Image (tube, rainbow, N blue to C red; front, top):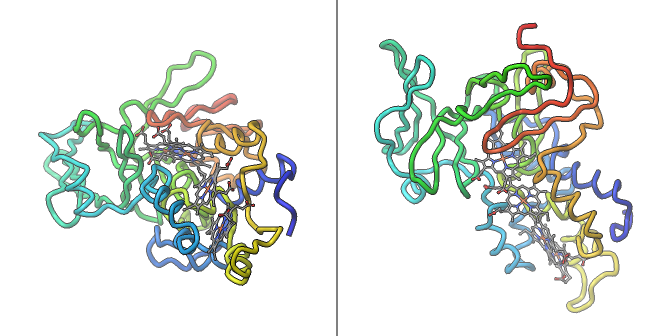
Length: 314
Ligand code: HEC
Ligand code: HEC
Ligand code: HEC
Ligand code: HEC
């Protein structure tokens, strides 16, 4: 095990990126969105609950925090506590949308020229200013629903209305449909709202079997895999801490290192050092070439791509 304190910026950045995004593996999830603690465990992740026996105060502070709640399941209790019923319908393009939160399952209903379709609300993201909701949309995709909720105004709004795809060079921006890949959780929300995410995209069938260990930003997204830490501290005689704690502490980080580590998610800009699969690039943008640099600005969810674009279909 390398010594973590004072290690190079690149070393721990990589570690954090790995912790946040890359760790996981092929999950045998029957339903998409199945959590995959088993896979995370095999990579040395122990889960946030495991910290509780020794760090109760940290656990309490974290579990109700925005990090702890960065993504949560949609439940009746959640709806009753956090949302208000939608008045009327919201027209988007040719369709009208209404969120039905009265029953044990929440839905967004889509109506167009006499036909009607229901999309189940499965997960909730955000909560400081707005809530976004995710629905299963086939082939393992979780899609951001067209209706979002404004926490301050207590009203529903068109999620994608502000989602404009911008191109450099003065080309007119294109508005993004809510079913666009830019709003697909599996690729576009990355590991920023869940922990130890693995996309598990299958190019052949164009299907995702995405897994993650915990919804929200868990302890180990910041402190790294902690199974070894747990093991040696459970064995250590009381009051005698081992010199190497086998965990990532931020105490020794320089301000720059701290900024870099937080901005992996917070600056919403990062270099993709290894090119993603071609299909994943295609789902993120219509066309990008190096430098691989993608920036999302949330909650407007506009996707900025620093490259020369090919217009969709072109
Ligand atoms: C069996 C008890 C135990 C468990 C379980 C445990 N810790 Fe610790 N941990 C300690 C003790 C004791 C220390 C040293 C005193 C302190 O800093 O609180 C420590 C220190 C730490 C440190 C500081 C390390 C340093 O180098 O200063 C971090 C970070 C940490 N724990 C995170 C976690 C996380 C995250 C989990 C869960 C995945 C966890 N711990 C689970 C007992 C435990
Ligand atoms: C793995 C991604 C990730 C990392 C790393 C991360 N954050 Fe966050 N953070 C988030 C997300 C996502 C939210 C918003 C969650 C929500 O609103 O539901 C958030 C919310 C917050 C908030 C609450 C915002 C508010 O105004 O209420 C603060 C403060 C914050 N983060 C600080 C930090 C700091 C400091 C660090 C580095 C020590 C950090 N974050 C690292 C993803 C991350
Ligand atoms: C690069 C990391 C990153 C990605 C990718 C990302 N988010 Fe976030 N998101 C954040 C952070 C960080 C915050 C907290 C910002 C703050 O409070 O300052 C946040 C906040 C939010 C909020 C709450 C905004 C508010 O002010 O209440 C929602 C809702 C949200 N994200 C949804 C999504 C959805 C849906 C996706 C994918 C389509 C997504 N995010 C992709 C990092 C990310
Ligand atoms: C968003 C990143 C983030 C998350 C999530 C997070 N921590 Fe931390 N943790 C930090 C930072 C930053 C510090 C402060 C280091 C300092 O003092 O400069 C810290 C400090 C600590 C410390 C004090 C020892 C030390 O290294 O300074 C412990 C123990 C700890 N965290 C445990 C936990 C546990 C347990 C959880 C989950 C319940 C958790 N942390 C979640 C970033 C995080």
